[in-house]
Length: 310
Length: 300
Image 1: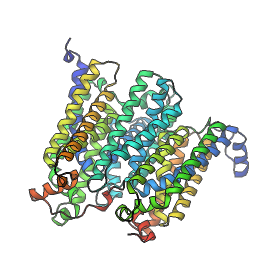
Image 2: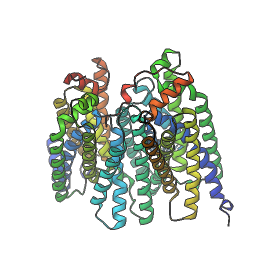
Image 3: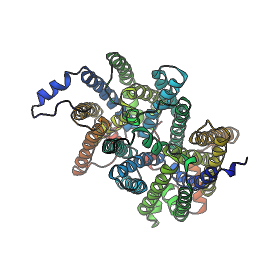
Image 4: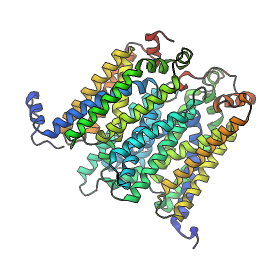
């Protein structure tokens, strides 16, 4: 019996493709800006937004989208120049989670019999195989929308990411672009969280983009690769989950992504060992060089707040 | 945690009433140790801008517990194995230099997604571990046994002793890795050691507080303290004081109200952080804690 004769598989593939495309595109820039934590935090914010909507009896999706986009913009406003700061994110989202538990208590005490665990678990872990026809179409629509906006702002955003000071000096609206990007992160997070769960979201944000940046130094190739990898991982994971029914799809998709990321890292280390010493440079300086050759920016020092301390 | 009798205006009698319960006394003991440990480790975590890594390591405890239960081991082994393991993976694979920040960000995200996915797999294989998301995420502090308090105190003493040992070079390496490396400080080794200590501390603490409350206690008091003072010793003391006060008030508020402790502790701590931010804006001290510390130490 063919896999496509099950409607739930068709819906999962449709919706999953849209979500994977949006997450791949957004994730590429999140990784480039060293901001994956933002996506992680927003997926937890979605949990609070959904619970707040439930507690007040509003449509769940309104709560989700409002909460994630609002907090995304708030985090951007508290950081500098529309960039989020790790510690600010940590503080905001730890408190938002506390609020989430508060709403959970409100919800479960107000409506007795609503059951504690199951609803929350669905918000956190969502089920891609449980998508309905309309949900799948919404997911696909939101995914295409986010991808389109990302393509529109990709060029100035890349410039602002690689060299913020020079971009600002050349008249790129660094702050506005940063906020537009964060709003897209919020929208992608809200859609992905309610459709496939917060868990899968992080895997789709970080793994394909990380792999793409390990495989290529060129920004556009990396962008396309991240989106392609995300969609490919989604499909592979779904097929694997279909073939092994005991395996939850969230696990199989994330596992495929992790494996691809690990292989990309190994590939880069091998290549670095075989190549001349000077070409073993990290991805970001190489990216700087390649944007320079495109005529986008001149090389200046790395932004101090992004420097790792490990 | 509903109150048997309400809150009166006499605070002394309120506290006496609360402490007549053995479970509350144990909760206060455990909470105090947790606050001290989390504040000290968290101060270094915030200084090193490793909040994301800290959050990932803290979350790794949940799949660890699920795996241990599925394999029939004690949950403690799962907590320690996964927390320390996740910390070691992040520390070992992350690289220094330009571009390392982007890579560490992606790596941390992948580690977190994968460990959570494993937790999901174990839960679905085992079935029935996952009841009560609230206590899983935020713990309850109630039902802490005296034996657990003793183990907690032991682990806390060991981690704090190790931190005391590497504290000075760790601050140097965190504030200015390049200069520290030039002066012969083993920057990379210190980074690995710190993340493993962070893993051990969160593994122990999250068994009592849950995966998310431990993160709140790690990041919030430390960020508040670094906003208020630039001196390491004073900042550490301040972080410990804030964490302890917030935990005590949180435990009390949760006892006398129907709302959970996770909500109270995070709300009190966030209130302190917002006040410190406002104070910082009022006294015009912008910039990151790291830069302040660098100025105070005179190393940058």
